Image (cartoon, rainbow, N blue to C red; front, top):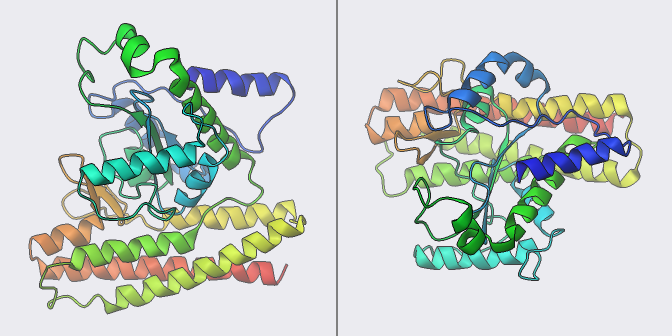
Length: 345
């Protein structure tokens, strides 16, 4: 899938079509030994990535079946869902419709009572165990994850070979081709967007869910989370206001290039602002305060705060809640400032 996507990008270049922004295609060594290749590269270029990088698209295991699974930080989840409308699944449906059907089956099997909807179709609970880790948890870049999955059985075994793929995993390599298309379209949308397609209102709603899940079934009386919830509301209001300004500007077709670059730089800073330079308690390398991982690779939202609450370490929990509150406040101010720039343009 990666080679075909790269071939297509190269063909566009030969035809004289170049993206607005650089697209870097990476094939990592050492994923199975501590994510070594991606981690070393991300650490080496962290400063430059924080200044310039828009997003990281992660495709760990491209295709082992026909069921699409997409994940993303919440600010990019709406763009991922929207993009699947424009691609056709080999079943004849749009990729979007096929995704909804497979998501409904998966939730039924897992006894997950949530109805499938656009605002919960993409998985916004992102753990570790794959090469996105350094970019999200250390650099502070938004990430998207893509895969086509099937029944588990041959992964990491001697049977995971071309014969199995040709006969069982993806006969005809139709889903590999679709992955190439989706990967390339997402890359070009992010690379060519006049104004970057971030949705911070959706992000705020996601953080609110994280706080609600943290509090569910627990005695939280030693911890006052109202200041956090208040700042989530401020961030959500700011995000919705900016989204309206972005849509209006794009509809007008008149966006000054210098102005757009300044607004895009501000929007890119939002993800960086979720980083705590000191890291989460006990694991300073992991710096993202919204997304983390347990030692099993499983997702762990609000990692510093959640682990403190689980240990009933209320002093640390209050400290982590204050960091979360301050980061939300900082991003609400930033997003409001970006909206004000549109008003004064």
